[in-house]
Length: 269
Length: 191
Image (cartoon, chains in turn cyan, green):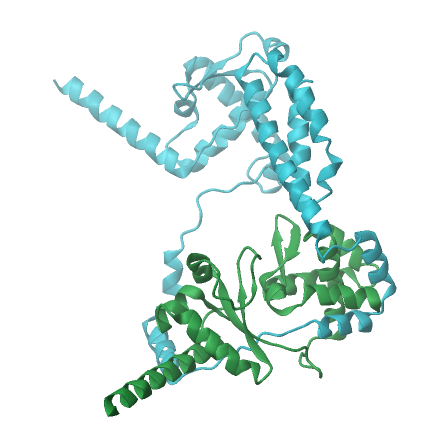
């Protein structure tokens, strides 16, 4: 059994829980024996964690199996196939009559009282006009969408030649600046240019013209030019999501300002 | 002697007042969904609110109505009983329903819509209470147009007859309150 198989088993357990399919489709005993057999072979922490997760999911399946048996022995149990067949055979009127005959509607009334009307009037009087209230709901600063080059060209954000020129400019900029902190490289004086630069930089990395060096412990990301073009194709290819936001850009700007002020103070002395 | 009679009268008056208050709380809607939570009844009627509800219930029986208790978990619900744990009872919702099924039409819903709800509920109950929405849509598509099915299912969810969680449909609180599920299945099978 490989870790992949454990993940598949977890997914299978989750599907049974989510969709309510027969929990006896899973041979719990067989999987427990297999897990026991392989337990000694797991060496990495991740494998052991997966093993524990499988055990947890299997216990949920056993619980579902208990419920399944209880349901089947209850007066509610009817063979689903028989029920499906019967439902398909019945006319809409017969189905509706069956519901009406087993229906005990809630008795509830809505009535406005003078006090409630007064509350409504007070609320109306205190309410600001809609045009003024709009300011309370600022437009969200984050958008989760994927844009291809074609989309940007369609949106007139870029033209094809402009795109290639921009890539060249960024590539040259990176070569001049050398290894540099990723945010220092892409962030510029305005947010829009920064996002555009981040987008173009992702192409540099994808094409193997730049390299990302990520230090997860320090939460640092460095970018450096790739002088050996073939290097990008030899290693493991993976996607690296980097979150950029207006707030993050503002923090970066403040930091830059502080650095500049500190530099000026030092020179002044 | 006179004092004792007055006290009894006072007690009766207070009890009547509480029963009236309970009736008003339960008959008139105070929230988006009908019914009153146990803790609201306790707050309005006092610690012995279950006794007040029991008195109201016996009065309602004469008019073919009853107070029903609906738990969020769908367990231990039904007619009002005092034996349940205090905390659980306070979390439950209390509503008034018709005790017997309706003899005449009492709903403006189209017959097709009622049929769809009936088939959907029976189908979900037979599948142990949970069915992916897509499965229900495909099942109903045998007799109704997709467009009508989509809007009907959304409406049942809004009304509380069905619940939806991650594209899986289940029996909603209102079905648990209003529909005698055992009777529905029996009626469909014997039709």
